[in-house]
Image (tube, rainbow, N blue to C red; front, side, top):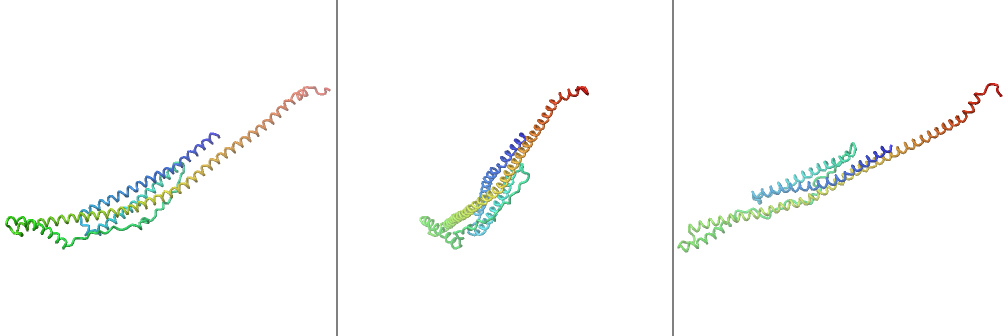
Length: 303
């Protein structure tokens, strides 16, 4: 009986230690989940940024900024939604992993918590849309003025040089050189302007992604903290119930053992009492036996 009681105590202690592992599993799982969700979101935003930069580098943002902005906002919304869905699925997997610690402790069935995933985008009211470009499309008049300015400068410069050779200020050579110089001036001006426009577009795009990332990361951390509290409260209740059940079972075993021991002691005392009575009867019978024997040996009628 003592060995059985010690065995039950050992089993209860091992079960309590096993159920205590759920806190470590939950804390480690939430830490890993938070890091993975943040890394996943950064990776999605990085891919979107690289794709948008490629689009900006291959087009004139002043003519296609509305299309670029719409594509960027749709890609960001899709990335955020996919990231939240993935984090929700990971949270469900974590809940199952925590529940497995209770099953390994000997509990046959564990009620899974209903993870409360808040409405996606609940904290996105402060987000701003993609900023507008300050640069405007180049008009035909500006192109003409730029070309003429370069051509006129070229004509004057080469005209002055050819005038020393006895040619007039305006001659085929100076006009041709002015045309080439004007073309180069126009091309350089367009390239410099396009570079400034694209840099402005990239800065607006990066600022927009940074603003979204700031808000989404805060929302994501808050969601994961809420899920952690929900899982903690759920499994804490199960752990407390399990602890109470184990304690009650152990107390019942101890009470049963004490009852059996008391009954055994009572039975032993009763047997000892009966044995003592039997011994007294036997001793009394032995004492009476000699007198009975002598009386039996005397002849009948002898006085």
